[in-house]
Image: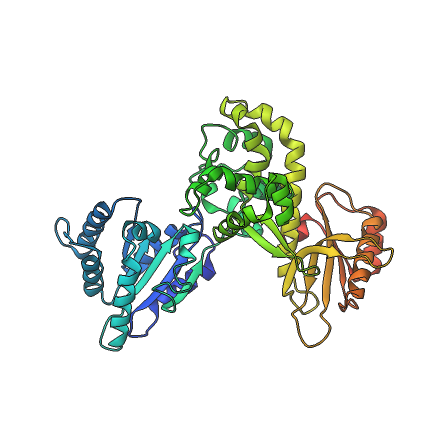
Amino acid sequence: MKPAHVFDRDREWAALRDFAEAPAAEMRLAVVSGRRRQGKTFLLQALADVCGGFYFVAVESTSVDALRQFGTAVAAYLGVPGTLAFANWDEAITHLLDHCSDRLIVLDEFPYLMKADPSIPSILQREIDARLAHRGTGSRVRLVLAGSAMSVMGKLLAGQAPLRGRASLDLVVQPFDYRVARRFWGIEDPRLALRLNAIVGGTPAYRTGFVDHDSPGDDLDDWVVRRVLGSATPLFREARYLLTNEMEIRDEALYHAVLGAIAAGNNTRGGIAGHMERKATDIAHPLAVLEDCQLIRKEIDPIRKRSLYRVAEPLVTFYEAIMRPSWSLLERGWADRVWQAARPRFTSQVVGPHFEHVCREFALARDWDGEFAAEVAAGIAPGGGRGQNIEVDVIALAPQDNHTRRLLSVGEAKWSEIMNVGHLKRLEQARDQLHTRGLDTRDTVLALYSGAGFDAALTDAAARDPRVLLVDLPMLYG
């Protein structure tokens, strides 16, 4: 049973519990990853407590020092006085697996152990294979390898890696989605919830250890100045630390420049490179690393099939758009002055794009008359003849089959603009242009998403046509 102090995470807990309690009489391996602050350690410590398992969290250290810490932890778990003096990691891992043959073993921040001794994955491969060879009479160890360095963890089971094909669970702990984050922060007002989500996203630790459970209340401005822009607060440098935590990132200035270009609205590789005044080939590697780290996500325009890049961590967008341009002023303690000047930019560069992303999340989770979308993204409805291209914020497509693919919905999202019939006509034109591109648009829903509301004429039009959907903030969070 999930402990009461673990908020949400029902899916993750069920997967971990099923792994730990699986009746199979053989050794099993799980890999658990996720960016820092998402609650992996919290979950795994709770699992180890419930199962009576061994839990060890590695730190960045030398191989000798890490081996000594490991020996101390193993001795304490097995009830052996003092420290077990292992000659090497081969001996240490074999000893632990032999003496915990029916236990749960959690090795957290595993990339630090790999850095201390790169042979550890190969040692584990040998031990797993040896124990599986004696299935039924050998080990029933449930081994969990966990880590926050996403670029490292993502390669643990890939390609020719020693542990490839040996894991029965590969779990990524993601941030809370926008609805769960609202409940976690205890916020009633959906407008406040979305603006806050555009800053801190769904990272649990940003509410607990970073702001000491201090919720914004009704005054987000005061909270931002106190808790985010104050130079002595934990959140102040957090966006910068997210890059330093990744082992494959060396030139932080280059990676911040890429993130800054994307946060400024440059979503294509050419646009990012142009903003940085570099060649597109120069940023291919940084884009790949940032995607592996889950600091950016790559979306595919479903119509033009081109890649669009978005910053995946809201706090990074906030930092790049609001904090980084005024860093020297913030370090001097002028948070209030910076925030007053940056509020229009916060609306246009931070909240607006985040609102569009949340609308796409809404469309992906929505039941469109008995069918869920297989693909939701922003895209371009190309004009034909005299028609002009139309940027569409939300394109929801049904699963691909042998027939003409159904366009479930096209949508436009406006955070601070009252929407009118003009917006509806624009969506109608986009739908018609997509029909000429071979999509089935007979039942396409025209969805208008607004953080400011809808005028009377548009409300009347929606009341007359069931294929017009108006989505306000209460519905978005419903």
